[in-house]
Length: 166
Image (cartoon, rainbow, N blue to C red; front, side):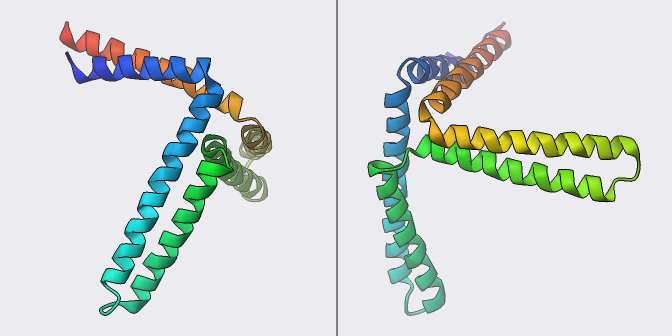
């Protein structure tokens, strides 16, 4: 069986699980992210101590990154929902870029059309800030949206795999 068909079927199954069981899937993502961060943190700390004699400043930075990664990993496991946090964080980054681009376009726009487009970009940035608040406040909706996106992506992979085999 083609890898695209297998990926499509896996994405569809994962998407259905995310959409049907959003709380459990969001918690699973938090656990997986937390465990990965903790493992990464320990690897950074071990790497930092292994090259301490050659590069103390780089080793200290590795150890600090490792400690921060372990702390974030523990937060993701015990306190913070990683899925809504990461999606909210991405929305905040996108909103910042849109708001900056909108203000920049309004101030330095050459004609009326470009300034009007910049106003629309600014409004879109403000709307994305609202989406960031909603994503962080309600992890269930984020998990359902991720599930729907996984199902759509699975259908695309499955149809691409079927089209290639014909």
